[in-house]
Image (cartoon, rainbow, N blue to C red; front, side):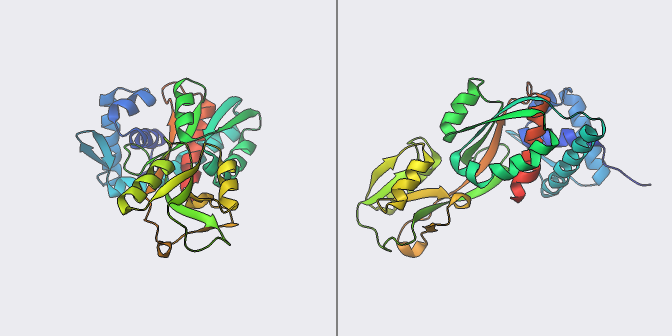
Length: 284
């Protein structure tokens, strides 16, 4: 007997994976927690694999669950796109997106190019700022959706991991003086805190030459050879170089990229863009 993957089951499974809790996922898909649990049991029976692992904090995906999630996101994205196109239901409204400057340069053009043609009547407004400022704005209701940086160990959905790297001009000297001059983001950003923690642990003296949420200002200071910057690897411009371990600087951690969205009150347009990001961003 042939089996097929039901769209409703996959949508519920994706909600469980993204929220990490059956209670929150049930609210997102407008089902009771008991009904959602039954759906997950049906899906596990259908694929004959365990998909979820119950923990003290909620649920996490098994290896088989992670594999299915990749397929589920592609299937759901294709299904929703086909339905919107064939029914003539191009989504309308205004979508307010928040994104850190470095991710805006690295990823946002590709994300918007793939989404805007599908929904030409939608108005998209983009706000670029440091993650803490985006978090504050999203909490106040000033953004429909925000892409933000989180610690690699953070709970919940991580769409992509990025390595933090030390960056300097290509013509800058190989050895920097002590104390090491730094160009960093705002004091409460991950790059700022990670750089200082790594240098403190290594016992390397440093001074803050520049600290601001402005990426253009940070890059200007770095290009003038006045300081070493910390960026995500994907955001390093071609005129700057990544400093390797041979430079004597300590290793920096990887960070995660996730979505902030109020799933219970999100508009169809916001949900559509979130689904698009989840299907496209990991492969960029």
